[in-house]
Each structure stands twice: as C-alpha cells, then as structure tokens.
Image 1: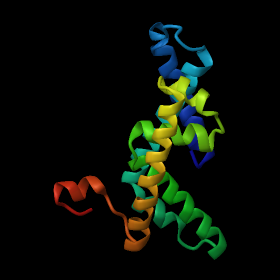
Image 2 (image 1 turned 120 degrees about the horizontal axis):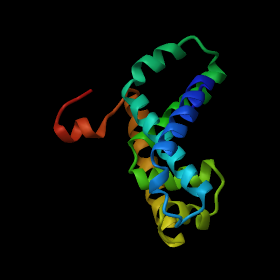
Image 3 (image 1 turned 90 degrees about the vertical axis):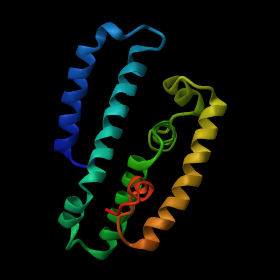
Image 4 (image 1 turned 120 degrees about the vertical axis):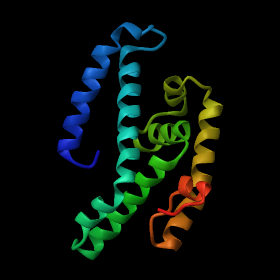
Length: 153
C-alpha cells in the first residue's frame, strides 16, 4: 500500500468485509484463497482511488534525492498502470509478478484456466508497455477515460 498507516487501515477494512460476508463463503476454494482475493481486490481499488488524487501525492514527493526519485517515479508509474488497467489483467499481473504465484495458483483465485492467466498477463504487458510510453512521453498525467469522453484532466 506504500505506507504503514495505509496497510493498517486496509487490514482493518478487509477484516470488516470478511466478517460481513462470511455467510457468502461457499467453500469452492480454501478460506485463505478467499481472504487473499478480498484483500487484493480492496487494495487494487484503493490504488485506483489514489490515482485520482495523484497530484497531491506527487506534490509530497518533491525534493527527494535524484536516485530515489527515479525509483519513486517507477513506483508511481506501476501504481498508475495497475489502477487504470483492466481489473482481471491487473489482478493476474499482481498475483504472478508481485506476489510470486504460479499461473495455476493465480488461475484458482481468478476462477479461470492457467492458459487464460497467461493471456491476461500477455494483454496486460502489451497494454502497459504502450500506456507507459504515452505517459512518459507526455510527462503529465493522462486519463484514457477523459480522452474517450473528449475532455482533459
């Protein structure tokens, strides 16, 4: 989540959500898989919300060392890509690349085949490569949804 306080808040919120939806657990997967999916979905949604408040976050990052700024820029880009990507593609990428899951484990969480996980990741990577080029070339925030509506952010 980026900050200890955000992680603590996410932990509390996930706990509340699990307690509220315990009756909906149908046993198709293990309890830990179900809990992991709730946690991942909550965290991805939080990242999406943060992308809308990107300007404030970037203002707080001004003044960092050059080498640290490069890694922070990469982190911001990654967060932004995950927030703007198709939800299933983003989940597959997080499960495999960030959480180190196998395609089989990711497939179980997503409720799809291993082959579909591979396809989701392939589409995410192709989209992310194109999208990161656009963002870096522009040097400013670009919002695809705004572009589709014909408005700029």
